[in-house]
Length: 300
Image (cartoon, rainbow, N blue to C red; front, side, top):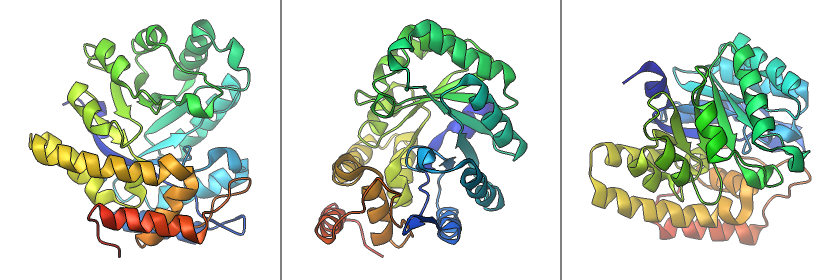
């Protein structure tokens, strides 16, 4: 197994950024990272969508990354460095590299969505990859970018760049279409972006997943990957159904606020989302608690 593939294999948590009354709670972030460090997670995505990257100032982003750097604990860390301009993204990516992080995860630009065709996205990503001191991962999440997504044709071309080593796909259809086309590209590695299609994606050649449920239930998420590796497919499928149903009740229904509520229930410090996102009501939290128990997971 090559070193890049090894680093990207397994389950990664897209770690949340805790807030309280709209204030950044770095001690709570540190607590969560230390708790997650005891799990079998391969690593973390810092400043991703669940990390509410767009709700953080530049100085707050650095504060968050400093905590990740201090609490690395041998985990592989990807950093979300996407900005709307190519130039700004390069600056953020170089900053992440200087702080010692392994990969940059780069969401497609979305403000000028109608102009983000193949030519624009290919130029954007190739220019970043040429300038980046660390390998980069494409991040396809049209739900966060006004519908912009990287086409199969664009991914096929970008996968040939030596410094573009993979992608996270969080589109509603999942990465199946990319995996079908790209399986023969040995140096390009696809990660599933949801528990809903994580298990199916592993069968099609994904090396791992960046799973929001891993913030609150890292053990079961890692168990699913382990069962797949051990070829215990019947057990893995049963666990997949549990995690998929639970994912629908948590992030599928409530987004980041649901992920944070599930963390609070499971003994982490999820905290509140930052406005304009609203925290869950007590009734909504109770429903998540009921869903966790209904799937057979113990609440700590």
